[in-house]
Amino acid sequence: MPNDRKGLRVLIVDDEHMIASTLAQILNASGFEAKALFSGEHAVPVASEFQPDVLLTDVIMRGVSGIDVAMQIAEVLPACRVILFSGQASTADLLDRAKAQGYRFEMLAKPIHPRDLLSMLNRPEN
Image (cartoon, rainbow, N blue to C red; front, side, top):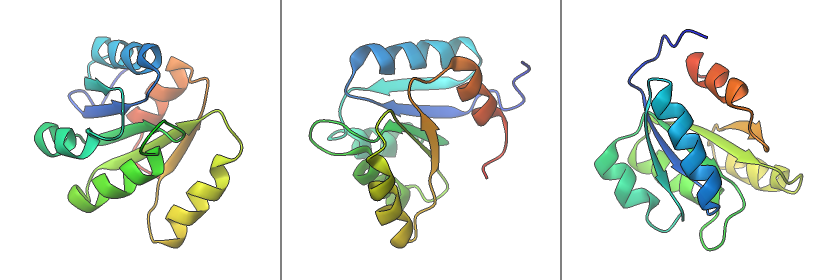
């Protein structure tokens, strides 16, 4: 699949090291500039420095949730596209809470297939 959005910076946040690292490797190999973080606690300062075009974060994490990370980064970097991912149906309530506060996030189901992720990243934000 051709990547017409080469060079996009993607910050990946997931407390499962293997998932975050693997997604970063896939994206870096596909022409993106990806950085993996393993907790939400450091996401805002890292995002402020890294200046991602896209935040890709798991919703359910130990400590700070992905929804909270997404809302904090959206405040600091309003142009940053936010894609949340989760394997749990209970995340719908968290997503509804964010929408009620005026945030517009995209959703991707776990397990993430690389083809689906690349397809989502290669099309403009919905």
